[in-house]
Image (cartoon, rainbow, N blue to C red; front, side):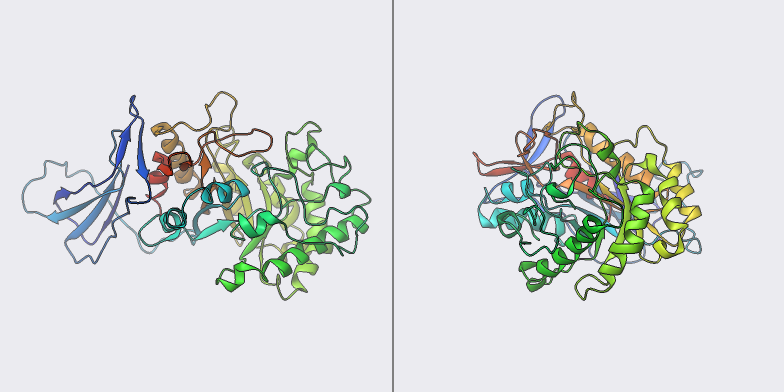
Length: 428
């Protein structure tokens, strides 16, 4: 894994330094350990002059984002002169939005098992100048499977006026900061398939649109805005097609592309635009797998009224091995004025994948391959799922344990930076 930052390089000699605190778990499984006294940083590029270059290198044997200073040399490097890298600055592609991860309840719970200094270290490692320099954070609206319980913000049945709407303990304690209300779903539960009750455009749908507005109004009044954090965008529904499965294992709600189109056109879009707290949000459709594209985007964006409220298309990675990345280019070519953002990915989500595997290099490679495929097909950013999880891959109220770039061992008061963490560091 290499990334090179350079100015006019020709032939270079390389010098490297390494100061990581690694644990070799055998079978080429290597993690970097952080505790209250030590955690490695990503060395900055620094100032480069013509004839200078910098390389960052990671490998399976334990090298992790090791910076190499490349010095121009007149000596024969032995590299074939037929290898030529050409950068055409006249040809441009998508404007990148960046990379990021999700502030789930589970991530917040695990952060709070550590001392404040280590909590800061994890967040600095993701978002700081000495870390991965993330630029996006995903905040679930109410609970997900990566919570310890089911909860919404307006759980009083029949409260169409949302008079009892309020944030919960999790919002204040765990989130640095979309789901739904059980009594509004046809099955009466967050878990399992179902859709909003009543006719489309009716009282339940109007209340659901107002639920978004109320959330953004109240959320700006807590620690987000006071700490200089404002919401940039929102998706309409997480993985809406999963709501077709009556036995779906955790929170879901069904929307078809046509239902999403009509909801945003007639209710959600106007409601957000009329709110001073939400009028500038970038609204994203789909927030589901590649297999919905390009048809999902066609259904919504070919309707000019609906399209006026939409900024982008959100995509999850869970079926990427089954659906070629070329559908992304097809979608872009049909709708070039709308960005595409990969909003969720994680390893260990399949039954036999082993959940967290400390030091697994193959999982870093799956991230690299997916990011390259997405970005090569007009995707403008890529977001991981949980920022950190425990040794089991949770907590998760339905035991849907998965892996994460950072695994926290609260009993030892330390955390482990997985190969996935360093793989993400090769993209900026």
